[in-house]
Image (cartoon, rainbow, N blue to C red; front, side):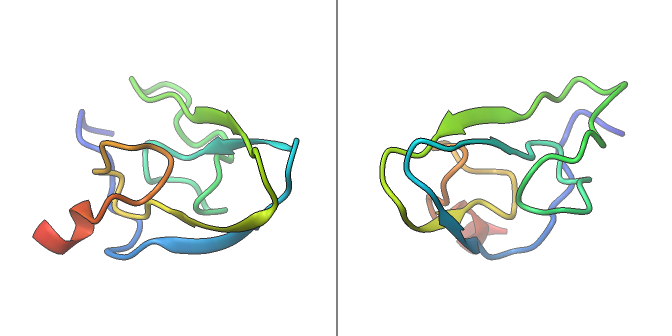
Amino acid sequence: MSDAPHIAQKSPFAVEIEAGKTYFWCACGQSKSQPFCDGSHKGSSFTPTKFTAEVSKTAYMCGCKQTKTAPFCDGSHKAL
């Protein structure tokens, strides 16, 4: 795995998140359970981004792994 994350997809993942629940967003792009971590980063320089949902909602999680607002999409995929 290189220093650049793998682009899982060039659009966000729309996922339902639950208030108070903790999630681990895949930062490396290699997880088979996108957009969440499945441990595929082990042995690389990547670590997942841990976050706890403040409210239950549909969240738009970054799929291109280029976002500046991890784990959420900031539109960075539009420049790829």
